[in-house]
Amino acid sequence: MVRTIGRSTIDSVRYLGRLSIFTTTATMLIFTRPLKFRRILEHLYFIGFLSVFVVSLTAFFTGMVLGLQGYNSLSKIGSEGLLGSTVALSLIRELGPVLAALMITGRAGSAIAANIGAMRVSEQIDALDTMDINPIKFLVSPRIVAALISVPLLTAIFDLVGIFGGYVSGVVMLGVSPGSFINSMLTYTDLNDVISGLVKPVFFGFAMATICCYRGFYCDTLRPGTRGAEAVSLATTSAVVTVSVVILVSDYVLTALLM
Image (cartoon, rainbow, N blue to C red; front, side, top):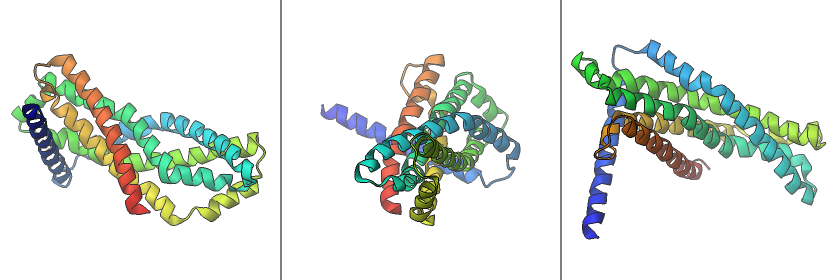
């Protein structure tokens, strides 16, 4: 038992050390020449634009559920007029950043891990080294920049579409006064709420990009004896699960710090 605990501890420390070095290197290489503007734009399109539909769809029905549940709760105490602030604050401060990041991780993060993992098992990363091209700068740094830009913007879209969904659910379907919905939302939502809701996605996007790239980059070391497609599938699953847990844990920490 002691040997097992010791081995697990050493493996965890080794993993954190390698991840820290990988993340630091990729971040520093963002600011070194040549700047990969074209690759950044390609990843912006893949991470950002192609995620708009799934993020908007999730946001709309999340807002509708919030409007329905909020109305049922507030109507018991005769405070239906506060539905707008309830929906807006719930989305802007918590549900928007977390759900948007989780959806982006499921759609784009998994693809990032699988793509880099496939390049690792097919020895394309080794070929980059052979051609004297830094694989971290070529593959990882542009994805980090694209995620840092895309995730906050997609979160803002999630918030706006979610509030619209809450408006449709509360005002159009349940008969809440449009004026009271909008007035309560504007009255009780201040700039600090908006800033808090846009700071979190920066951390979430950075975590998603670095962890998914790391898992794909070192997919052949994730489990001894795994090669080829099996290694890629394990890396993809591990990346999505790890990022999801990191998002939920860091959301609590950031919420406590930003309150």
